Image (cartoon, rainbow, N blue to C red; front, side):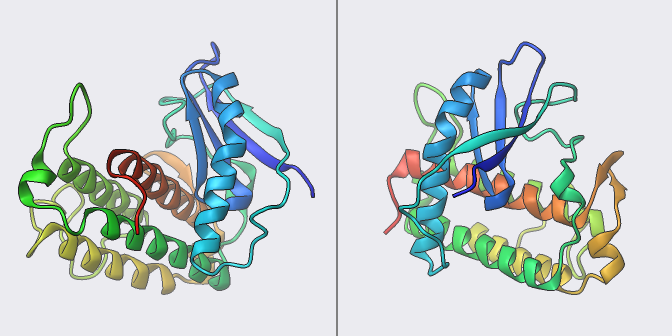
Length: 237
């Protein structure tokens, strides 16, 4: 097999690092140093391939994994954390309707696994402060909701939803039910994009962007926190 091309972001000291595997859109690896993040990447790829296979995607789970660094960016504003100012060459590819549907399906699979992990938790469990450090699960879920909504705001306010920055405050019903509804509106907006919106670069929050970059960051961000929740709560059923 051909090596997976890796798109790496870190500061010039090669400390906090995030590795993006754009051939498996959504797959990332992180570490406190570049060498550690790269060393963890094959396991992250294997984990992501198992996730896709669990949900019926046609992928060879047992195929060998080799990698090569295609790009290593060391200048930005929030390097190693999913820097919003960065745009990689594959981000410039148009987001076709087929691509969009495939990536929405991945978002839905990630959400299903999140719900399997947290759906049965009590309010007390959602609010519990982990020790010695970390955030309550409710805070993680609210962060996912707010961040993904901010990404989608690149295409304007989704119809029927409040402005960016107030999406959590305006929630109706339980948090999980509200998140599911917001996602359904976001996916409807993604499916309605024109070819120009799917293919032409634009500026969002002062940073260069494309429709493919928006969806990439939604996938990567949701995957990052699904992995975090798995580590906290154990594998989903």
